[in-house]
Image (cartoon, rainbow, N blue to C red; front, top):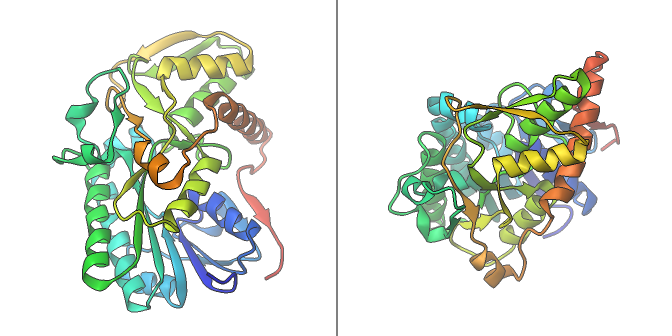
Length: 340
């Protein structure tokens, strides 16, 4: 691919999309089209040397605007968030099927050479995630299908849509199942944040306000793995350029309980907090981890940033953002005003 070809990133105003755009810029791509439905001032990262478009990709005509002339499309646009958002917005999550369907149609119409789709570990069969022992989920464990209600079913359906556009129309498609991505320049308050960011924020609040307590959703025994954003961006590119046809795990295999995640953040912050457990709060499945056998086989690589290292960077960023918000500063958005 030439550095002069048009590369499209949808969901570019979001957490992962913003990091992907920045990575493409640093790799020398000159014609990047960043697309998101949010107003520009709400994008987490925005770059002046990029073609930034505010478009609602639920609408087919907007997907055609986004895709026209594109050589590669990275479709990260979706309605999503942490468990609190997913469990209370199932219909909204399901409607993301419009985005991927219309983007696939537009990619096929304009002869796009490569199409990447961001799926999720929420596609996995819930019966395989009832234990707290962090079952390592293989790609085959998505079937027989019993995905996370709403969000997971939309992702599973859209995976198959990508497959059938490849088989029926010859569109080059690649799909990765993300496992809990975290890091700086993402959602950290407001209801859409995921566990690492939420816990960092709660620890920062306890530290600065002297409350000495933290609320944890569920029993704290739930197990997860968490992938640092740099590993996610690297994996996206490796998978897009690979010969991997089936959806594949993209996640860390370093599983921890939520209680252990809190331990790590407390240690980073230098304090111990009283833990209050809200057993009625959304908590998701009991256990989930990424089995990385296939990605190691195909790419000789897997996400390898340690959770401690990634959380140190994430905590420091959220701490600074929290203090900026206390001072009445806008915070959050990182802008580059470099001319195109």
